[in-house]
Length: 298
Image 1 (cartoon, helix red, strand yellow):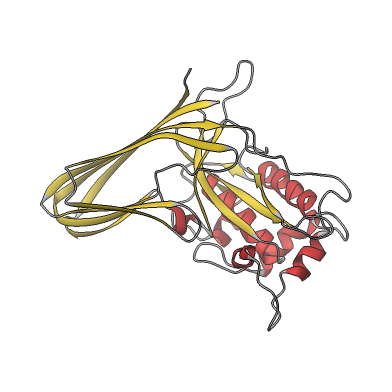
Image 2: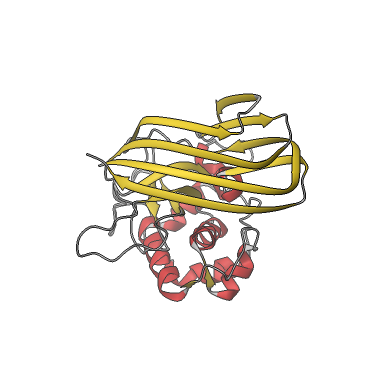
């Protein structure tokens, strides 16, 4: 599926900002199931400097600096992406290792081997490891259940037991608080699922991106469309050894990501993949408007 996405961010500052430096994650990734065909990032007023690099997780991180006073900032990312259905998580007995085996594989041992997924077992800024997450995850993890079946059940339970409420939380609401509230948005649900998996010793990472805004005929509109979206990937070693893989789970919509999803960035949590953040000199109050449009193209 070929998708066109426009992410339009507009800030109005009172009083004016003198100078500013910003980092954005607005360039979609190239993955086995996603190919970036075109991308443009337009900054108004024009930036004095811009740079781009690939971060440690394989995301494109764009830096730009504004060196003159400005009362407004507009950043428009315009991309065309060709997507395919990602490999589905293999479910059922024997399709992936038991969750206990994965936990043991990633348990720290001095002098032991290193797997790149190990980093996604540890706590991070937005995702603590905590006994409350262990307790919530436990019903999804009976002895011997495969790691991907456990993740699928956890996704299903979060979707069923939490209520999507856009004003229930803020960007910086602690994940433990969102767990207690049983309410939040896609960012909260993704953080909660990641925290549950990590707290029982399973590698899990946070994914930021978009959903197609137009639902297929006869299907309901998905929560999270017309906005940035967030979901989860869980790591599963191959049965019997060999390289493992990351598999996607969307607890907000109780489904696996499909060709109607666009991946922007992956990281330990929202802090690694924030669409836009910056350091400002001057200014005071600000007003933010964000618009996202995703549509299929011929």
